[in-house]
Image (cartoon, rainbow, N blue to C red; front, side):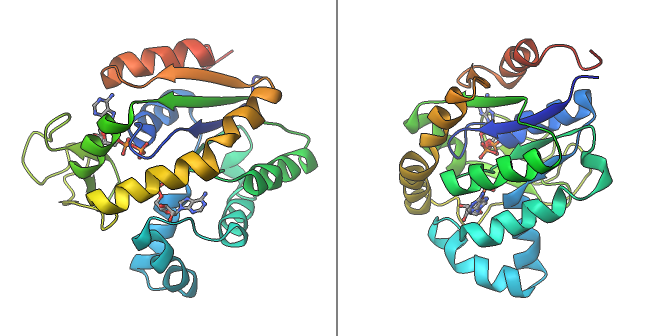
Length: 220
Ligand code: ADP
Ligand code: AMP
């Protein structure tokens, strides 16, 4: 059976979380978002959360050792046997190398890296208007993807909130960090021959159709 060991790559606001919901529903693989895991740690005031918070609030990357540890632990869970969808990881070359090592040891490799591309000014508009569900983390947008009832999640009825790091100044820094530290990963995965470039400027359903075309059928 085809393995779906997938990575969603792209700048903050490209639509990774939005597309992740659709991909995991169709392909039956777990969604592993290091951002969601870190935000849960911040909320629960764990040691890791306390350490990570200052980096996240500034729009900087949390140290590699912390996020690599999170992903290594998560990949031990049995639900990842059939595949996984990484969202927001890897973000640096050392993180990508660490992921390759873990997968090598399991006799697995990255099947596809979906790179979602969107212009920078659109990203700023998307991020500053983003609202997230406190319960299921589904993203909405006040203009581009509004919930049916203001402030309430369409999926689970949870409360919507604005992330602390979705302010314009922090967003601009996150985009710089992406360009300097994460964009080089496109070349890294190009060398492995696993990249599919996806035009993320289209409506979410259209973007998803490009993703499906790149991945092929779920049951193959
Ligand atoms: P990421 O996970 O890559 O940071 P999100 O999926 O959270 O991005 O999307 C960022 C914001 O842009 C959200 O407010 C979301 O509702 C909105 N958005 C996502 N995809 C699109 C799209 N194709 N067109 C317009 N807005 C979108
Ligand atoms: P995200 O939800 O993917 O936008 O991530 C939010 C924030 O969490 C980032 O700005 C980083 O501070 C931190 N973060 C998430 N994933 C990683 C990662 N793979 N490496 C380093 N920091 C991360």
